[in-house]
Image (cartoon, rainbow, N blue to C red; front, side):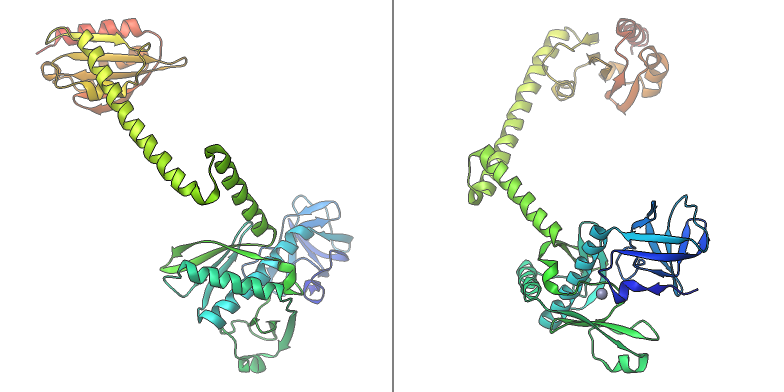
Length: 391
Ligand SMILES: [Zn+2]
């Protein structure tokens, strides 16, 4: 089966009347199509076939099929195909931008492209370098944007395989048979079966966003056209919001952020010291003598349960603290030297079930969550257990 591929002859055609030639479950084959099938890092087209959604387009040898779920088409049906043009045009621009970036990388920086991906929001290009400094990324971005606004026409050259191999390009030709070259005049010439815009000016602009290392190579990340514009506007919004919040100007914002972070860390340290001191005072009120078994509901105290742990200094007591919330409670157990033979296993067996307790820990501290009911019974059982088997 062979499908007439009108997306090559007229990549700007948005609707088409065609005939169904075969239906295989969700796969609908037409005699001709304007839908580009996934390939070369570009996703398959989406759109509508009559009133049904085309969720994807894929290649099948010389044929192209449209993925149309729950369709009721049959061979011979006359159908109307309409493309989701925003989706398609976005990828035409992104794909063309990729050629320009790879062309500039090769011609100006002698850098090869290893792989590319056109995502929903970003364009990524993996290059044959393990580092590519920021100043070069910005030079690259400028060169690419210059090429975009220079309004180069994008044209095609078709050659047979033997003739194609004679043309000097930046990457070896993988395809066989008739080879289609994309020529962005003076910027890039490469064998490619993808779809592109007719003129570089349609791309508007690209923005270098960041980079990462994959398989020991740099992967450059870009935003293209509308995505580039909206990224810049988002960043402007964030910066102006921060400027208002901190009464600063843009050039001061990093310094202001550094000072704020340092201040927060300092306050956190001071707060911790105060809370641990308060916990020490509260514990001093609870612990009257060595060997005591103490149960306390500390929900009304203004400090977190964790501070009591730091405030205990080897005291020889058995301590069970409960901190209730509206929905459940947290518990903490400390077992001093006279109680060190009580294992987590014993606690789990004897007292955990009373309040449906969960948690763990290592001697002398255990902690976790439990129900906020039956706390009195929990305290009673803890006292009995500890006093009965105290060493
Ligand atoms: Zn291409």
